[in-house]
Length: 87
Image (cartoon, rainbow, N blue to C red; front, side, top):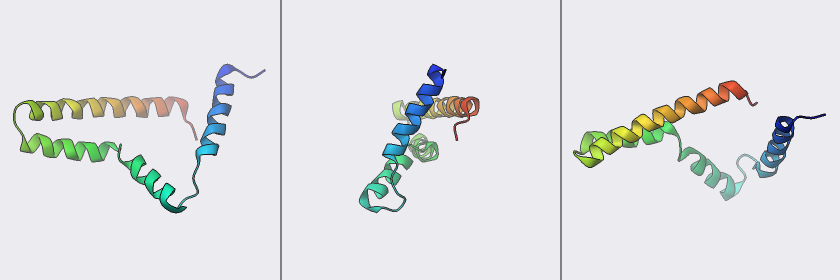
């Protein structure tokens, strides 16, 4: 008997395999790479750092707040990845 979690993992694997693109396979691959890296923490932290340095008032405070939120989010993601250890 398989557990609900095992069925969930099987479904996840099936969906992931159906969405997988062949590396370097044209415009779809290039768009996927750009889209995937657009959410990287280092990219946003750099942009927020520049915003924090060059602004005052609302945007200065907001960029600091969002940077702290990104750090918290990254810690949560790494913790979840450590717990589940998906290959």
